[in-house]
Image (cartoon, rainbow, N blue to C red; front, side, top):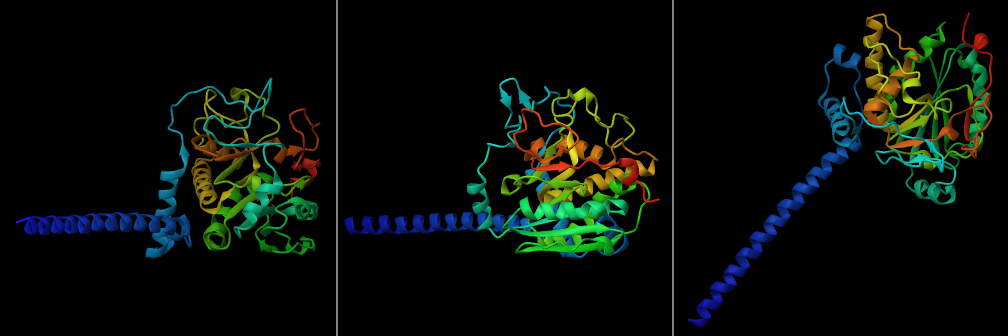
Length: 367
């Protein structure tokens, strides 16, 4: 009897052991499959724009890519529901600079990072940073200064892909590029109004990501060409969705921000809402996140255009609307977008990137 009881106990132990192992295996397999689906989304091989959806049959692979992009937006973006009211965040206080937003996104200032530490961490990951710049008409004169100073300060030692959009490719200067830095020129039609140039950038950025960057780069920055680099710009600027605090408004009350205030525009922001005023000269982040930003802004710009509405600051107005409800995960301080006609303030210890002094009347027309 004793041996029979022991046999039964042994059988039960083996049975429950096998059952437990099966449950663990199923749980592990399910988790790994979910992880695999997430990896598919993170490694999306191509996006499809609205034009493609209208004019052609969308392949299953393309449809999966779009679904993954939308899933990432729903699951990971720091989205603010409309109608939530709160105090305006500060950039500086009497005791000094602010280095964290209320939604816990870092604000990058001098002294908040060590490039000797953070750059080597990112370099070993073999990342690629795409950088777009638009130089149409007389703005091609700024390309040499932009590229030459970039080669001194911008992601030195990283793999960088420059994409220059211009109507005058013959005026793109020959600049000696560092190791693993490459330049591609795209010819686009000329435009007479500078406003039309800014209005079209989001669509071209969206298309570039669809056709190339989804497979070629990890991060992308879209930068204004009438600028120059004056200090280190490296891995400290990388994040999922990156915006820059405009140097002209970082101490301004939100109701004085130059937001679009007409309710009929898709870029409309009420006077009681807003965090910071973001400069349109710097947009960055992971390729998939910048894609969603560019796509949304392009769609809203088209809705406005169909109603003959042009936001007060064109794409910058739509960018600020997007950032209000889709919070950036990292903010760059005014160090990363100074204006050369302004004197440095006590808050800005170093200028890394700045807009150069120019005669707007002379450069903003192609006539």
